[in-house]
Length: 111
Image (cartoon, rainbow, N blue to C red):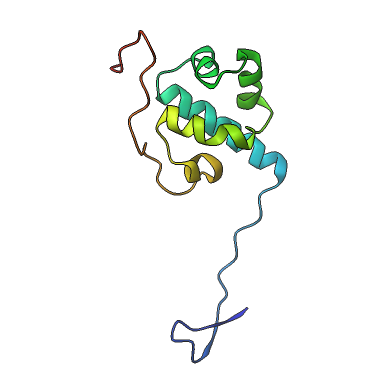
């Protein structure tokens, strides 16, 4: 493959393999695992996170096992868990929490 050089003046041969596109099934699998890992890292149970989101525990559980999180819940989940939305969605970028997870009522924020 030929691409324009960084100086935009010449064409260079670029032979590095492009990453393969992830299948939808593989994306769903990695997203669900990432969501579960982030929740566990925040020290929360599925029930606690579901309550914070205002949804049923069984509904939340399916987001960690087989279904993608609805768009309207992505930012609330990120705020509650204290993570970057780009990392939650793509698995790339800042892997460390951007903020401290929000403490739950009646629960110490220390682990």
